[in-house]
Amino acid sequence: MLAVSVYEGGEIRHETVADPVAGPGEVVVELRAAALNRRDLLVAGGTYPFPLPLIPGSDGAGVRRDTGEEVVIYPALDWGPREEAFGPDFQVLGGPRNGTYAELVVVPEVNVFPKPERLSWEEAAALPLAGLTAYRALFSRGGLSAGETVLVLGAGSGVSTFAVQLAAQAGARVLVTSSSDEKIERSRTLGAEGGVNYATEDWVAAVKELGGADLVIDSIGSTWPQSLECVRPGGRVVVFGATGGTEVTLPVRPFYFGQWSLLGTMMGSPADFAGLLGALSSGTWRPVIDSVVPLAEAATALETMASGRHFGKLVLACG
Ligand SMILES: NC(=O)c1ccc[n+]([C@@H]2O[C@H](COP(=O)([O-])OP(=O)(O)OC[C@H]3O[C@@H](n4cnc5c(N)ncnc54)[C@H](OP(=O)(O)O)[C@@H]3O)[C@@H](O)[C@H]2O)c1
Image (cartoon, rainbow, N blue to C red; front, side, top):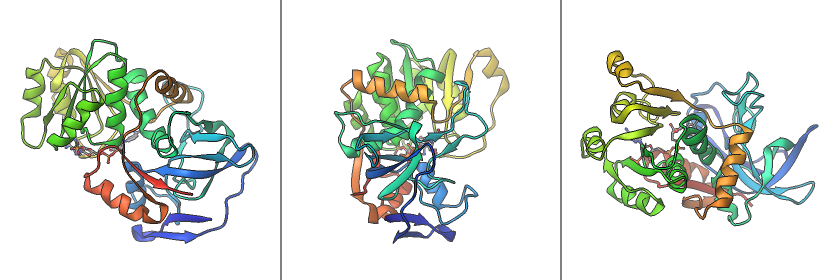
């Protein structure tokens, strides 16, 4: 099959490799489309100590070879029995196990779900990891209710485009931050009331002027102190990324005076994935796709992701 592999030093090769073979309890999926996540950049950049070469990619949709069923892949492997957190065998598809930047992928049978009928192949491939992360962050961890205000940091992020749409569908008031006024405008079309440009404005002051937030969705990491400043007393900040940095210093007294909650989250359980698919089927929203390029151009798509120019998901056409 044709696949895209990461080699030592971050070299990306589009090459012919042996077809993967399904083991017991596994299925082969003939991929129609795959999608990028920021994790793939970390895999290519050597952040994770995975043996190389490795086919990256957590997101994909395609045809199950043994039954002909059209499927979307749930990318969390071996979540385990606890809803609160994954167990010791948990892995993410696309490192260390080969992922979806390929014509074929092998996954456990329990990780394939029926493809949502109203989505195209590209949209279905764009859904899993980012949609799942947004769903769990908002609802399972964030406890978002109708009528609450949620602030989503970094409107252009793939996860953020799902968070905005899911929160709006749930009846929340949605605010965003972005480095781009155009991305804020695009977020309005997804259901956001408005937003603040963090590159040109004091976004904490602006959010406070807008009444503050009950819940902040923070994938930036370096912004924890500012995110906590934005929440009302008793509010929550849910965190799942470190795009802006991995270390922060927090003032302790305002934290307990404010009775704030700082909650970590990571992808999602099978129940979260089912919840995401349920939200999709009862709504009219669709995954936001920035662009679709052939599998052979995966390196270019990764460069686009690194640049932050995109809005929504970068997708690869696999076959
Ligand atoms: N733990 C998990 O389960 C999990 C799952 C998925 C993703 N993640 C993490 O979540 C983050 C987003 O992932 P993604 O795939 O959606 O990435 P992405 O599409 O590449 O989004 C990155 C966006 O972050 C925003 N950003 C960067 N620096 C910022 C700052 N200082 N303040 C506010 N926004 C800033 C930018 O938004 P603008 O262009 O609008 O400025 C940028 O477009 C990554 O850190 C990723 O590793 C974690």
